[in-house]
Image (cartoon, rainbow, N blue to C red; front, top):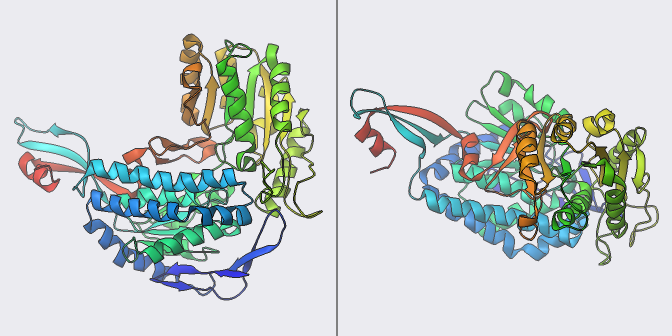
Length: 519
């Protein structure tokens, strides 16, 4: 069994004391162990501030982009190795592992492309300048400059590659060094990615450090120029937000948390149409991809009441074709949940929502997994619940079951009624609506947009082009209000703002242009 070391202050360090054991979630066999006991967290942060930060800030955007590009290439070059580790430690099917690893390398490459457009600048100009006096000479201009701190990234268990890459790409391009902390249970992939990058020497010293295990007293050492980007549960996020470094110390925090994403079938969509086919495909895929362990997975399915039976039957037919088991078996299309705790949480969630709803498919999620040892593994099958009163089901609208579970609710067919149900989720990362009716969409989309970071509109025109609402694209923002955490990541160069300070400059226009590198 391997030991996952942390990479801090330019060297690999095996933590001391009690170790956490990582397992194969299909077999429950030990895979690795790790600990951060004895690690100098304050020293790691100071190493980032004193070494990594100055080195990155000395670079232009284009030069940082070259670093990010080399990171992408190094990860892609080790693709098969990383896929195998994801199957072993995260319970991913090969397709799910590709989604994670390729999503990570693709996001890094996308940010390398954004860097090319920013070119030789080191300061990011924000919008148009403003004449402040009687003549254009006295001028004002907003601009972003890198913060002189460290970016701490705490990632979730479900995307050890993509979660690392999407945060690191933006921070490094913005000029901030990174201390990344993957979820311990599935840290093998992230650990190997950092080892690959360290061996390839693609980053300046101190620009990237890794913690495998508990964060210990790390947060107590954060300072006013530092930032924390967190992806995980809303309960953990609430505890983090209460830390003194954020309440009174001036450090920034960005949170991506729970999300009761919805998929709504418009009243105009006809049986057998391309739009209906896209709806069914997206719902079935997002329920089962990564065993439903995606922050963007569809949890609530809303269809007009007069076609609820037909849509439920069509979804059940698709879900029944999903082979659940050990992803090492080529027949398997959905693997296990990541941990024993996740399995317990999902079973409890199914029980909770079942108390208020009817069975649509899958019952309580019991399944006989293919290729797994008898009685082993954290498996649950796809579960579709049903209700004729979606507005009244608290478990559907207030609790996210983080697994292959969704509830189908019948609704009246009017835009206001659907929007009222969607808003009961109190904020989401993404919801999707499937319709070709412009009048319906014009009424519905603005009614739900304030509760969402992203709204996906599925129609016949995009049926052959869209990767679906569950795919996070680097050019669009990712995050959401309310229950979803209130954070925002990615969005092309918009994502840089979290890691930079926006400053209003005012003075002689010619001098400002010189400072900003505009001439």
